[in-house]
Structure formats: C-alpha cells, structure tokens
Amino acid sequence: MIAYISEYEMSDYEFLALQVQYRLLKTWQAIERNVKQERVLRGDEYAFLNTLEVFVERVRKLDSEGIARRMFTRINGKLGQQQASGHPSISSDSVPRASHAPERSGDQRH
Image 1: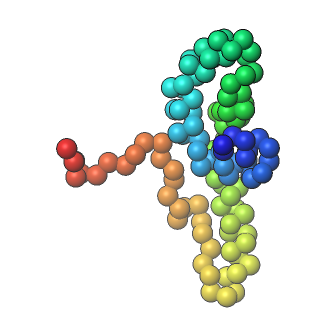
Image 2 (image 1 turned 135 degrees about the horizontal axis):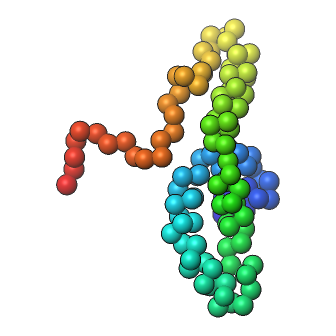
Image 3 (image 1 turned 90 degrees about the horizontal axis):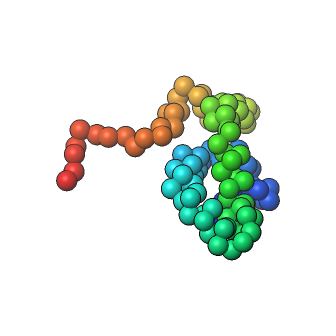
C-alpha cells in the first residue's frame, strides 16, 4: 500500500521511503523469487506486485543521509521562525541516527 501512496504521489516520496527503507529492502529480498515465479505462472511479467518492485528499486537508490539532512534543514527552518516564541530548533546532531539493526541492551531475555 505504501508503494501505491508513494508512486501515485499521494504523499512525499522521500519521507515515506526513508521511513520504510530498511524493512522494505529486507522484505523484497525475502519475497522476490516467489513474486517472479508467480508472474511466470500468470504469464505476465507485470501481473503481480509490479508497483512494489518499482518502489523497491527507487528506494534502493536512495541517499538516506542526504534526505535526512534536507528534512532536518526544513524542520530547522520552520522552527527557526518559531524560536522567537520560545521553541528550540532541532539540529541533526541532537537527533539520533537511524540504525539498521535493533539496539541490544545488557538485559538478555530468554
């Protein structure tokens, strides 16, 4: 569904892509072979999840660091206008970086 929202420009592509990039690429890696086989069975290479595949290919080429910097710049610009009313701005240094691996704490649950 996110692929449709992005590809039909119902929402900001970069924002959506940045939010789902890691999980989307891992999911596509897991299902790609099955999707291609389903297309063979249907006799049409565009008959199954083609919008998702297009979205995956676009997301794969993303400069996620650049997008994050642009978003923080936009946020700071909007918040900078509000600083006079006491709202602090957000810097990219104060926002934690997205991690592609879950954080692990010393508390190991079994």
